[in-house]
Amino acid sequence: MQISSRAQKIEPFYVMEVAKAASALGREVAHTDVPMIFLNIGEPDFTAPAQVQVAAERAIRDGLTQYTPAVGLQSLRERISQWYADRFGIAVPAERIVATAGASAALHLACMALIEPNDEILMPDPSYPCNRHFVSAAEGRAVLIPTTAADRFQLNADKVQSAWGPRTRGVLLASPSNPTGTSIDPATLRDIHQVVHNHGGVTIVDEIYLGLSFEARYGQTALALDDDVISINSFSKYFNMTGWRLGWMVIPQRLVPVIERLAQNLFICPSTIAQHAALACFDADSLRIYEQRRSEFKARRDYFLPQLNAMGLNVPVMPDGAFYAWANCSEVCARLGIKDSWDFSFEVMNKAHVAITPGRDFGTAETQHFVRFSTASSLQHLQQAVARLRNMLL
Image (tube, rainbow, N blue to C red):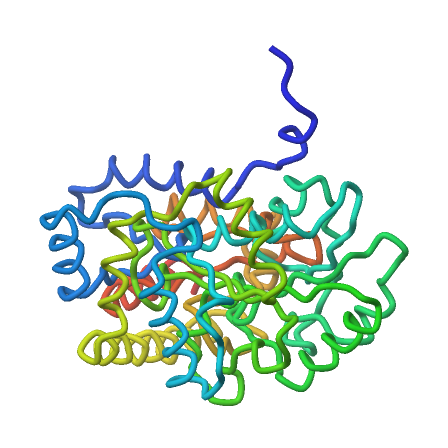
């Protein structure tokens, strides 16, 4: 059997390889005094609120389980539109909103609609690996541009302008970002978008962690720039519905028929049950719960990051959203005689029974010196992890 060159270009998702090793060890030590603490996967420890679960049960009971339109339930699109108005003070017509089978489907649809073979998409390094693979799946090429702490590990207009070439089609950004938890300053984003606009390109912004922004300065949607920006969003993170596989995208009106046609053929529609359940996400009681949980994520960040810094695991930029800490482990590795962040992650896993993620997945710009911690776990687990790490490192 011959494997396609397209499939062979997709690198392994090393986060999941580490997760498999951590899970295997976790099963071995599950009933010991030091069970595995998982700080490697970016998944909220909260599940969907009771109101959302009840809405799903009601949909099943009432037989609301058949196909929906490919772009999603009109009622859901209208709820999302109202959320933009209430939370961000901007008008996003429901007709420009397309419900998708998770943010992954939204990115896949955007890349399929906009990228020709050999087109280049500019992205920051480090960045979430799957995003660049969506570009590859559309037969384009992700061009990773090294970033630094001085730029909050984000691109700026000068870097985009310098990297723009004859095959460049646009940029794919993330704000807040995985793995760094940092957002693009609104003024910087405006300048980047202007460069892209001047070249006739497309600006795609992954905003799946936008609801988990902790600072008003950064907690703004890129859709405020103009109607040509494409925003990718999800019910997974802020709305705590990871396994429900539901997301959405906001696109220019002229692109809606194209995306609809692709969605009809590739996905038929997002999960009907998840869509009916998601309507309850926007009820006042649900939103109060989500805001309480957002405060809890911020409290976890505020506890955990100073602890990392005190152990020599330096976090050069304080994350302003999401639930990640991008920590430089080179000082600790040098002291302990460990080669790089990959080996360090396995040392921490085996000796402290704390699972973390090496920087290998996220690019090549000094990523061998960094590890990603997820603070999506409970404060109690974070405190236990700190105690174990201190015992191992200090």
